[in-house]
Length: 172
Image 1 (cartoon, rainbow, N blue to C red):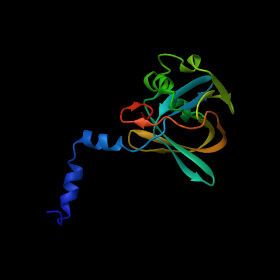
Image 2: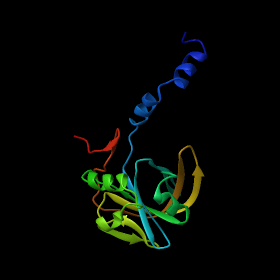
Image 3: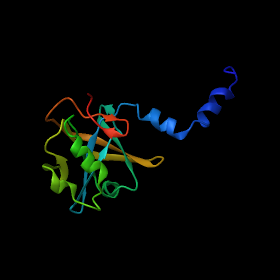
């Protein structure tokens, strides 16, 4: 019965994982390329788990999987960039999302600038940010990197590329 305290608990705990994953994918998410550099090595990946945390001070949070090449660069860096992708940048989202720096140097394939202390950011995107790493919080299968926004630029502006289900695709 719905009045039974265990009614909803049992349904949530026993929910099929794919249903939970499908429901989580309905949460709107921006798509961005996170740039990192350490000891002259450039890395980058597509992230859809990015959010504002604070306006004063301006903070961004990005979740990065520990198995990613860029994760190790971030752990040994003091800053990262966020290039918020424009709606017409599905190819860039897939390049940085489907390939590892272990396989190819993705930055060699796109126009980019080095910000701050040599951290790559896309030259063409909706907006980009340079963030100083303030904290790293271990969580489930991703760690959270919290960065204080040191600079921001609006380049192409809106519309930004949203995450849609399992792929990056502009609205139709």
